[in-house]
Image 1 (cartoon, protein in one colour):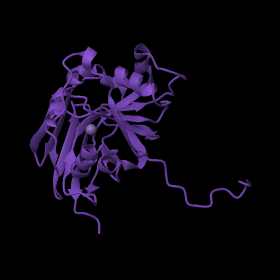
Image 2 (tube, rainbow, N blue to C red):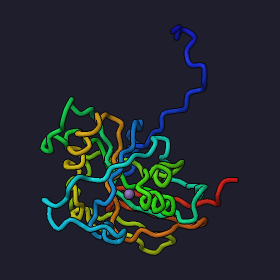
Image 3 (cartoon, rainbow, N blue to C red):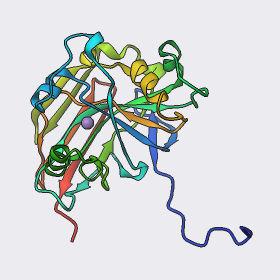
Length: 246
Ligand code: MN
């Protein structure tokens, strides 16, 4: 193959997230490689979706994972109501950004935190009707989860400035009304445990994001709605649902 002529098709830009300090000052950008997502990682949400929540760590089994394309991110802004659904749902989530490649092989839980570069808050937007239909037939969730603009996220804040996650509250308001709220101490699988589990399946790399799963209170969004997600007082993600593109 002669590659000397270079790309024959226009390349899409690498999606990037802003990185800010706690005072909101810009530090630079984070190029996104992959987006991993965890399903059913809060007991109250697992129950509201009709699943059985594990009663203890020994009963957790294995986490549910799925992915979104990197260019599904929307940086702190507006989202067009997606095609193909009549039931777009919000899921507010902690988002973890990796700053280093994992070593080859399984990543020990005790070494996982060293990979974490930053945190933010985001929405795992979900076409719930398509996901429910796929679940009922035992089919993949891709069309319900991995669509364009399905991952609005706030600015990243370096992990060194965030401190202990377990003391932080994840929350979402829609049109000024509280829809979801939970402490991050309620995660069934914490961040090191999730990175350990992911490393059994994928080679984790710098640039990867992990959506950590949502607490109870998921519900529908309509065109015109304004959302405001917060990770404690650390960072936030706000925007509007715009009418469907034509
Ligand atoms: Mn989710």
